[in-house]
Length: 257
Image 1 (cartoon, one colour):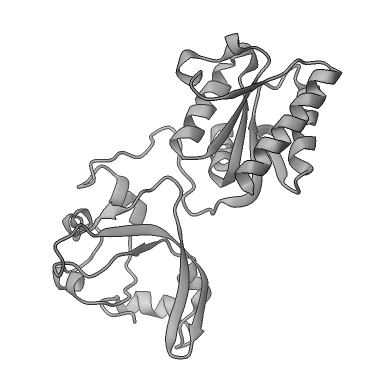
Image 2 (tube, helix red, strand yellow):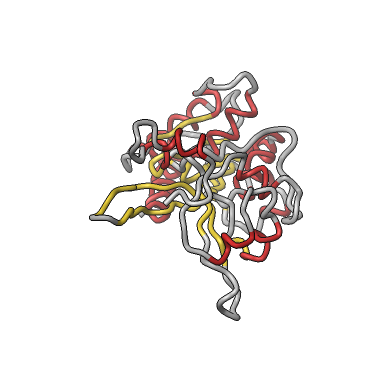
């Protein structure tokens, strides 16, 4: 434990001489096997630690993968050894080290991975997915009754429902939108009226791997690229909204189980 960890980092992780599990669990984590001993492809995973606890002399934990980040071939991690402050012989020894620096910047800043990070907003990678949170992307003006029906469908399942204008956590509204999509288990997108903001936000939700439920008052409002995805259509009147609420609740229940 804490091999190949700088002394000042050890002092942060062990402020009173013993391991501070809360500080350790707050850090983004890279988990990978030793390399060079098998022929088949091996992978590393990136995520956060949960249920970190001592079991006898063993430190046990669960790893929750960071949303939108697939497993990474260990050869790519080895190529980033300098950026990650990993010495080459560390790849051949099982240990737990804590390193300085930004793990996500090293992995996705355009280095050996060849991947680029967004430039106009930031993914809040430090935040977990909230399993009971449903994000709603929809036009604001003229959709009050639709908003009420969606919230009633969500809340009937014991889930929470938020639109971007329900929160104010950042200076830039787009950061609030991204944070909401990132933290949500499901995104409901109302494509009615061909609102460009909703289209943009729906694309981000798809890119982050969120389950997206598409709504529209007319299929003519659904762009060609999204028509291969099933869309729940509804009429914006009392009967139509009632039917939409029932169908939406059924779809959400099938997704969140």
